[in-house]
Every structure is written in structure tokens, then in C-alpha cells.
Length: 336
Length: 235
Image (tube, rainbow over all chains, first blue to last red; front, side, top):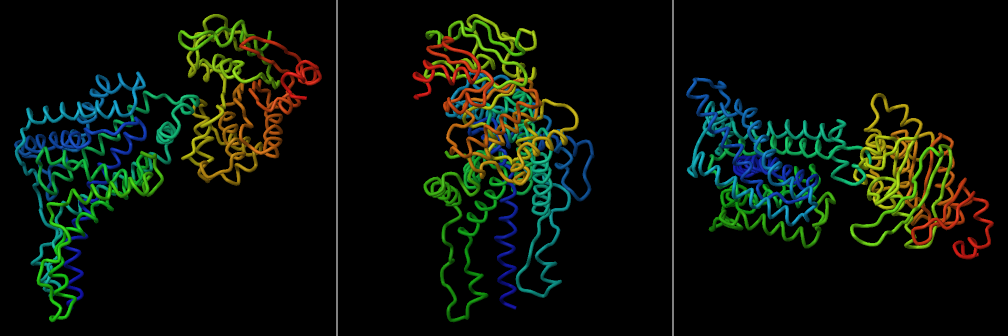
């Protein structure tokens, strides 16, 4: 019985949150990797672009609520996704037209484009600050829990409760759908194949008659969808604090690089690697050991390897270790 | 008048000196033409000019009677000129089949029968069709590169050193394939380092020296020309 309690404990406090957080990182990491693979620069505006898309979802959620529109037990924010995605893509294409395309046509080195993206990041942050402000906002409505700890205890008679938040299941479920559609698109459709060909060998793609303008457009479109959905899911699960998204860029980049930058499935996996590492290394295992060890061996400390404040240090360490020992990542992406 | 023709071509990089001056090259369909010459003779430059990767200072490029000197590379590709670069000539992250599909993007309609034709021409590609090209051997990659270039059913095929870096056995095999391609009524222009072997399968050859036409003639004539033999074939 204690053993089952221990498993439930881990499931509740590590596995489920890690899967959720990992899915959110994965969407961001695929965004980073697509931009890197196709447009060939590290986009430092990633976090704030996700925040930007989420901002529209928050505003539209408030608007929908004021109109009395809701999505039943599901969060109203899900209804706003298509509109938020639309605004996001429009914003990205505007930025591309007025900022990135100039450097792309000039064939600037990737470092220069990365610096330009830092500029775009500041602009995006400023717009967010003006439009919605920096304060914390909750925009989750509908049913908050699928399974409450108390109900779980009553059903199973265990000491440990398992809480399943609706946002956790929604995140995992939506991520799987979005990522499957994206992989289907990249691997099976003509446009997807031309995107991969362009990412692989730009000159040869041009010689094969692939239109680079179309590729850029499609890439930003997919990036916009991923950024917005990733941002909204993160905001629903935690809360929408615009500048937390900026901090999330470190684990997102770490995920993209761990997986092998330029490889979408690597980024997808990388998201979970980073999330599980962060959560497993910062979880206090005291209660877990109390369950599985005999009373005499009961730990006196929290048995926590690192304080949760060091969460980002873990992503950073993984990033450094990967860059030192396997710079091409798990799936042999482009070398950095 | 030949099907594909570069007339009095003069070109150079930016404001630098002219790399090729008044250079003339042409090829008819169903013909293999080799461009030879010492290092720095302007062979690759001539090819770039024909393809539009480098613009002409003077002269013309003509295909089927139409002057395409002002067209971009992409537009020339649409006119049926296919090119296999010397390096990075395949999509190494894509499978063999996907490489072929990408090659046919300019063609509308059903590409299955074209893929079948390519598999007939290069049986090894059929065996490896689902494999990632990056995992193939050098000779197999060159076949993928040729296959990709042929997918758009080109009227002109330009090859930049198709046998660079492969073993002599593979080289013979590749030349056999090139002869087979010629039978599909394609004009083939190739730049080659292996001058002797290239001339032996070519219908005609050009020898360029410092960007000018030095010798031209049938493959056999050039092979037997004592001056060409002495200066370029090393025999």
C-alpha cells in the first residue's frame, strides 16, 4: 500500500506536472527549431512572441466573457485560439516584412539576424506593456479539476491524493494533436517537403524551383500557431504574467538544442527532457522516502537535490553539457 | 544552330577581372559535351553563367531559339535547365524518394511514372528508396543527385564534376548512367577533372584556357590531338 502511495505521490507532483510543462516547452522549442532550420537564425523574440499571442487570447477571453460567450466546462480561451493565432501570424509577418526580410535578402550572417531578433523582442515587450501591462492575470474559466485529491482518496482509499487539473490534460491532449498535425504536414505534404528541403539545402531547393517567399510565409504561419497555442496553454496552466515568458526562453532554447536544433522531433522530445530534469531534480523526496523506506531510515531533511529557485540553472547546465559533449544534440541537428 | 547555346559570353565576379571572355559553348539534345581545362580556366564560371548564377557582362544564353540571358536562375530552371552542383547536390536529411519528389516540384500532375523511370535508370535507388540520403555512399548519392535533376524532365542537364571524389569503379558506373541519360534526348554539359574518361564518353568537348576557347572538336579528335594530349591529358 505504501508503495502505491509513493507512486501516486510521484505521479501527482512530478510526472503529471512535468508532462504538462514539457508539452508547453516542446511547442516553444519546435517554434525555435523551425525558425532556426528554415530562416537560419536563433529567434530571441520567441518567449515574447508567445506572450504576444497569449495577450490576444487573454483580451479576447475577457471580451467573450463580457458578451456571455463561454465554452461550457472548457476554458473560453480555447475559443479564442483561432483569432489569437490570426493576430499572431499577422504580427510575425509584419515583423518579417519590415525587419527580418531586409537582412535575409542581404544574406546577413545568422548572428546579425539573432541580434535583430533581440530588437524585435524589445519592441514586442513594449507593445505588450502598452496594451495589457505587466500584471498577473488569470483567464482560466470552466471546470478547473478533472479529478480532485479528495475524490481520488475516497475512490481508492489511499492516503495520497491525485489531482488532475483540466489544464494539464488539455495541454497534453492539444500538444499531441498540434504536433501530430505538424509532423504530418512536414512529412507528407508537398509544402512540408519543400520546407524540409529548403531547410536542408537552400541552394539546391532554389534549383529545384522551390519558392523561398512561400517557404518563409508558411514557416511564420506554423511558428505563429505553435507560439500562440504554447503560450495560451502555459498561461492557462500557470497564469498570464507577460514577462515570465521571457524567462521561459532558456528552457525552450535548451530543449531545442538538446534535441538537435533544426529537427522538430528532437525539439519535441527535448521539451520533455528539460521538463523532467527540472522537476525531478527540484522535487523534495522526503515524503516519497517515508513511504518506501522502513521507519528507522526515515530521512530528516527534505531530500531535495536543488531548490526550485535553481530551476533555470538546470536547463542552463543541460545546455552547457550538451554543447560540450554532443553539440549536434540527440538527433544530430545542425552543429552550433 | 544548337539547342542550347552560350554565345560570346564574357563575365566576372563583381568588379574583378573577366574570368571568361568571348566564350562560346553549345550543346544539342541527345549529346554529351565536356568542358575541360586546367584549374582556373573558367569552366565552373562558364557553367554558372549558363545557369544564371552569375550575370553576363556581354553575350547571350539561348535555349531553343529563345534568349534567356536576362532570366534569373529560377526562371531558367523552369525553361528546362537542370543542374547538379559539385557539392551539396542532394537533400541529405530527406529520403531517396523525397529527394526525387522535390526534384519534380516544377512539374504538374502525376509524378509516379517519372519516379518509376528514374528507378529503372538507377535500380539501386529503388532498393534504397526509404533511406535517408545522408546515409548513402558517395556513388549512390551522386545517383540520387542525377535522379533528382532528371525528375523535372529537363531538356538540358548540367553536371559540375559528377565524378569528383568517387572511386574509379564508381566513376565508370556513373559515366554509364550519363550515357543512358543522353538517350532520353537530353543535352548534357559537364565539367570534368577526369579529362580522358570524360572525353571518351563525350560527343564533343571544349578545352578552355584562361577563360577563352582554346580547342574544340569531337571527343575522339580531342583525345587524339597531340597538343591537347600533351598539355591537358598528361600523356
